[in-house]
Length: 119
Image (cartoon, rainbow, N blue to C red; front, side, top):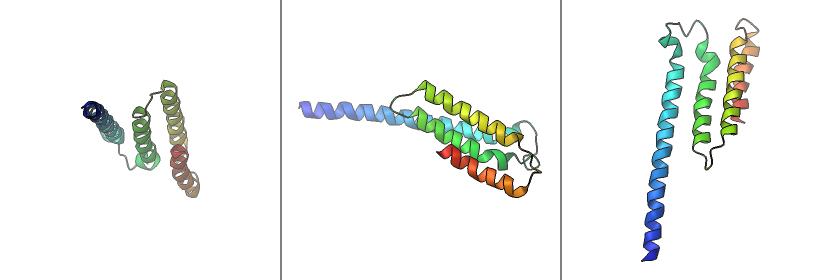
């Protein structure tokens, strides 16, 4: 009898945990969708400013990183703050680069910055 009670308690805890993770996943997806829609919200032509070419990988990896950090067993505020600062620095860096620099160099930056964020 006691064995069954322990199983039921763990099942209830797991259901609550899974619901929290799904809620965090949905909130991360909504944040990513809102950030991707920034040019349309402010009336800019996204194609002319290379917005998606520069920022798509940053925005997607930010959503993934937030989900991983917020669903960890222990939420460490220092880790969250450091991640947000790192993403902010990378975003400022990639957007300050001029698009008229050597096209090959820009393609390498667009390729390797997401790899850096992945690590």
